[in-house]
Amino acid sequence: MKIFNYKALDKNGSLIKDSIEANNISDVEIEIEKKKLIAIKISERKNIFSFINNNKKELNLTQTSEFISNFSMMISTGLTIKNALEALKESTVDKSILSLVKNTLDNLIRGESLASSISLSSPSLPGELISMIDAAEMNGNLELVLKNMNSYLERKNKFQQKMTNALIYPFFLFMVTIVVLNIIFTQVIPQFAVTFSDANAELPAITESLFYISNFLQNNGIIIAIIFSLLIILFFLLRQFSSFKYSISSIVLNIPYLGLLITNANLNRFTRQLYINLLSGLQLDKSISLATESISNLQIKSDLQLIPIQIRKGYSLSETLKDVKFFPKYIISMIEVGEQSGSLAAVFDKVSIQLDSQLENSLERLNKLVEPIIIVFVGVVVSIIAFAILSPILSLNEFV
Image (cartoon, rainbow, N blue to C red; front, side, top):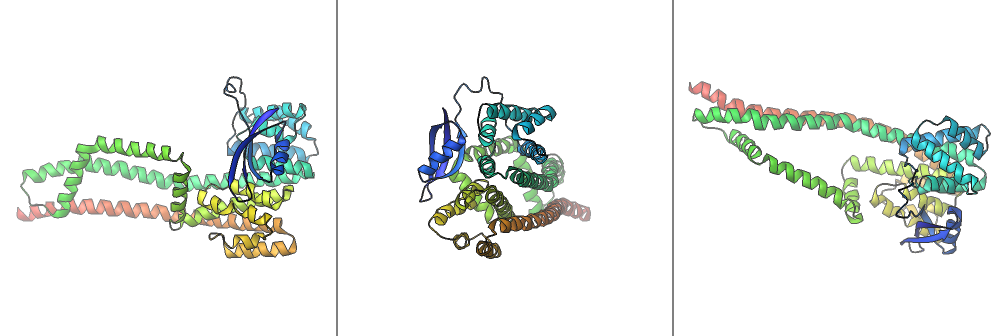
């Protein structure tokens, strides 16, 4: 018997964290359902010595996507699960993915289900992914679910890469600006300060302010660097606390444009995950619970966590979502139509595709918007510095 840790929601929407002894994840899910709870995440508990012989390597998003893609391709050719894994074992080059494949195959041979085998082989994989595989295996539509899961992971990976690429150049510009301004204030401006001081020139207020800032940075540069470093460390320490993360999540949602981008990114993840969950055969309440776990913003996650409870009470999904302020009305209308026609999964597929397109356009606009803002900022700062320096120089020339 193994020990599993789990997170679940009770009938009031409260988060329950507990552990249970069981042979595999499927048995854990059965026990959780007996307690009338909605399972969110299940993982095997590790003992304190597990790192000694641990050959399980954690997978990042790109590696997870590659594994699901290759596994899906093998299954689509008609191979059995065991034969598909054996074929992957022979063809996989990436050591982390190979470790997952080998351990999954070993667990499968010992009698574990596919979902349980994968979960035990790589506890870092998202719980919602394991639950989808488990449901798909029981409902006999593993090939279809793996195909859609692969599409979801590829799109998620693509979005993250685009987001990173969209921010790299503006960040580079910003850092170059900081370095250049630091050189100007600590190396260039002090030389002008000495020149004007020797000439006993009467300086404009803007030039005096510039020299004051320069002098302050020269005398307190190390202290400023230490304080800045401590603030960064403090930020990462505070991130360990849910209340702080929740506050940050709420703040970023209220930032113009960025808040909308983050909301749409999380809604896209939620609707795509929900589509695959329903496709795999999971009940609506559990599908929503698992899809909610894929959301990164705590404010949005908190607003969605009570929905499964309302579903269990007999409310429709569209009716419940009307109380969620950030959920677009047009999506709620589409969901309502999907509920009436019995095509809810197809609606979420369409919504996620639509949100995908909106996100791509938003990222392009963000990239086009941020760069000019930084350039204008640099231009304004340089112009002010140039004016502050040239103004007294011209006055000295007139005096001469």
